Image (cartoon, rainbow, N blue to C red; front, side):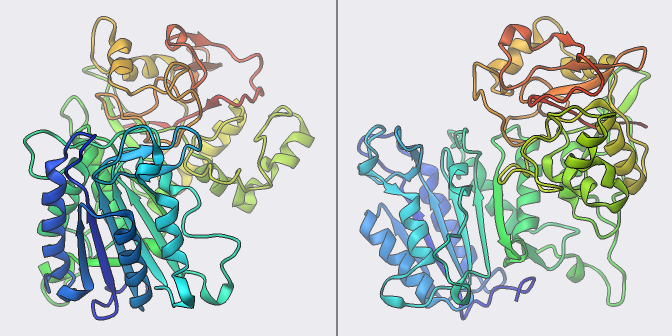
Length: 497
């Protein structure tokens, strides 16, 4: 059942690693990844798979990989884990992800294994064989976020055999390369995964769910300014637990002692200390609400005397959808708000169906919202988070974007790959896909324009968007009216300390 340890007697794992290549650069850390992960999967104190239930494939062929995955999927009645580390390749015509094999070339995709083939055997083992009801795929390769599209589902899956839960955890976003730091024992992503499983996570429960691992990985990799992981789950897959927590909260406290309060991992990534060193109390979230449903606020010391909280990312489609689902906000549903015509224009939430955003956009910044709609969301979210929220001022935005730097600081952000603008990805991307700036704030430049307020309280736009040329990223624009809704304009939260 979800939330319990995946039964090692009814689960299987296939660990695939390609570390040496004839045409691509070797990745020596991959061999270490595979060896240590196998030890952890078979350790009775971590998961406890029997040796025969944990298959390791090094330098394997396409046929060997697909057969091993198919056999494991058919042989597991609880959970099957498939892990791959190596080079990731993108088909130049279809844009599909391919997993590199020892003899793969950077150009011809037919020399590698299509991820879609691996996904297919996970869903449908041949010969009518049964398939494990829960599946976890972990990919440590460049462009691995491409695997998040079409996660473990398809119209041909009959309800009687549909997967109960499927989770894909990737080392990077769809537009990002993975990292194998020279001189380090493991690759960047898997190294952090191994560290978390080896040492455990203080304050977490006795089992590490996939959701908890993702949060801790994000926090650890953010702290090191390394590529950020991505995760997508189906149904209860976020609650799948493959590993015991060696630093589990229950094991660490006396019988009958209550669990201590825990600062969420994503908040901890930004710390509870401002950039000026002053300790700032954490923002409380509503009890029972998922962390991902509420904006994450980072305390930032903008000057010696001014510290504010800023949204680490713009408000997302999913977060704004939660606002629309509250009956008290019915007037802000797209049809009702457009019909009223007082607070939005006809472009408001284009593509939405009631409180439902366009498919696949849940983690993208919400766009096509007006100044009044943004303020209504902030008032609502602030009441539930227990902290007054507002839009940032243009001056606060500028100080946060500069992040204490002098000179042409924006060029540093562009060179570091922190900016989604016309010269980079040039399309709206999920929050967190581009690394944050030195103050740990993401998407200040690029992705979407931020709605801010000027000294008179009127709306202004800062930061540029995915379709903005580099030369205009630092401009300040005024919307044609407060009710204007544009497809490249979003907003983030701010609050006083």
